[in-house]
Structures are given as structure tokens and as C-alpha cells.
Length: 174
Image (cartoon, rainbow, N blue to C red; front, side, top):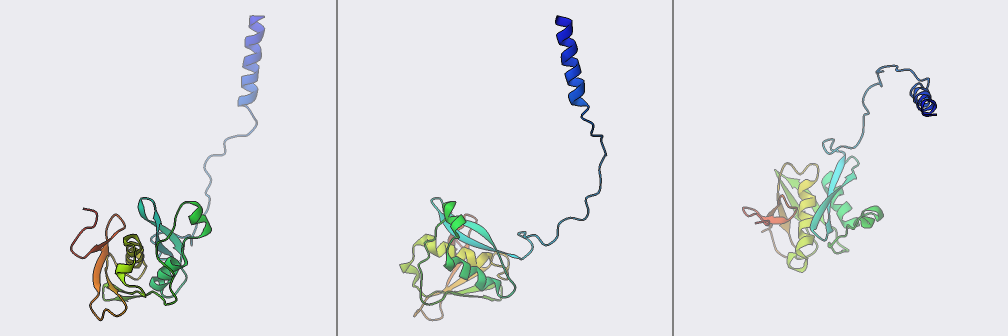
């Protein structure tokens, strides 16, 4: 009997190993996929929303045109249902007046309908970091924040490496 069991196990192993499909080797698959959304393609917007730990960037598809303003509009629209399901929220209040953003010689001019003092600090970070990360804003731009009724003296801030608004020359994470 033991010899019979060994023979049965060997027969089963040979049968399973030889399933009838031969090795064909590598075959060319064609050219790589083109047109996908990548961070370097300029076809994405980076919009900052809020988690319990602070701000968190998400990528959104961009259409042609003013991508800086598109990013700000996407921020004001808030997180999608899928983003909300992942726990993302916004602290930027709604407003009847728009938020305007425009590139200006290596800087971004951000015109708010609210006073900064009336916003939560994380909402200011959402606004500044979204403006700073937008295509067309340039690398690590200074964001000039203009408030209503405050004249032509903007707050000059940057988005630091932690995703927080920091006054120019200072680091908010230290």
C-alpha cells in the first residue's frame, strides 16, 4: 500500500505540472500608455483639504485655461463624496464673493472675501497651499494674501513642507 500512495502522489504531481500550456517567452506589449494623469503632466490640480492631522493634498484633473483659478474654485467646491468618505473636510467657509488668484512675477496674488482673522488657521493653510501648488504658480512661490478693506499691503506667506501657511522668512512647523 505505501508504494501505491507514493505512485499516486507522483502521478498527480506530474499531471498538475504539465497542464498543457507551453512557455512562449516574452512578447512585446506595444508602446507605453499615453495621456494618463501624472503629477508632472500639468494636467492635475493639487487641492488641500483637512484631516484630523492637518491639511492633506488631493489631485484633481485640470482642464485647459487658468489652472490657478481652477484650483481655487475646486477648493471652494469642497471635497468630493469619495474624498469625504476618506475623511477629508474643509474649513474654508462659503462666500457669495469669489476667491481670486493670479500669478504675479514668481508670486501668487490671492484676494480673499474674508479677513484672515475671521478664518481658522487651517483654512488659511488650505487657501495658501492650494494657491502655491497650482500649475502656473511657479516653484515655491510667495503667496500675497489680500483682505477686503486692507489696502495694498498683503500678507506674504508660503506653504511650508508640512502643508501649513507660514509667514515669509519663518517656518510654521518649528
